[in-house]
Image: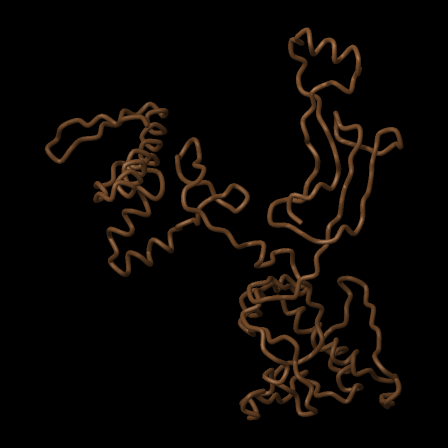
Length: 333
C-alpha cells in the first residue's frame, strides 16, 4: 500500500557541535549514537500492488551506475487492473485511442456464425492518418486465424497458420487477397455484421479480422486529479500544470473560444485573472470569500507585466496610460 517501506535506508544528519552528554553517548555507543534521518524507499502516494521482483546493483559487482551512486535497488510492483472506460489502447500502426464504452458480449455486433467482435474501431481513424497497415494486418490476421493449406483445400483440423515476414517486405495486397481466398473467406476482407441488441443486419459489409492491440500505460485511474489552490510558477505566477506538480487544469485557446461563444464575459475574466495570475486579485478574492463579502474587480494579470518587461529588455520603452491619458505605474507583486 502507499507509504509502505520497500527498502530501508537511513542518512546521517550533518555533524553538529556535540554537547558534553552527546560526546559521552558517542564514546559509550560509538557510531550507533549518530543522529540519522529515515530516507527509506516507500510506495508512492496513490500506488499499491504486489512486489514482483527486486534487483540490486552495486559498483563492487561491476555494474555501471551514475556518478556518486554505490548501490541501487529496484523494486518492481505490479497490479492487475481490468480495462475501464478512458483507458488507452493502441495497435502497432500508431492507431491509438481510448475506450469509450464497454458492453456485455451479447450487445456487441456479431458475425453470421454468431461470433461476437471484441473491439470496434472507428473507420475515421484511417483516412487522415494513412496508416493502412492496420487494415492489412486485420485481413491477414483473419486469414491466418482461420488457416489454410497450400493446395487451397482447408481441413478442419489444420488450425491457425503462423506467418512471419521480413520488415519492409511484408505481404502485399495480392498475397493477402490470395490468403483470404485460400482460407475460404471473402477477398474483400469484409463480412456482414448484425447488431447485438436489434439483431438487424448492418447496411454495409464491415471489415473484421484479428489485430494486435496493446494496453498503454495511460490508465484512467492514474489520471484522476483535483486542485483548489496550490503551487504557482515563479515567472508567470500561473498555476503549475500536471498531477505530479499538483497543478491546475489548462484553460487553453479553444476553451476560451467556448466561453466566448456563450458570451460568458465575467466567467472568462475570472479564468484569466483571479483564477490564474492576478496575484493581488486572487488574494483579495480569497479574503472576500472567507469574510463573505463581494469580490472586487480583477487587476492586471502578471502575464501582462512579464510581457512589458520582455519588451523593455529589447530596449523599447513601454508606458501604460489610463483612459484619461494619465501614466499608470505597474506594481511588482
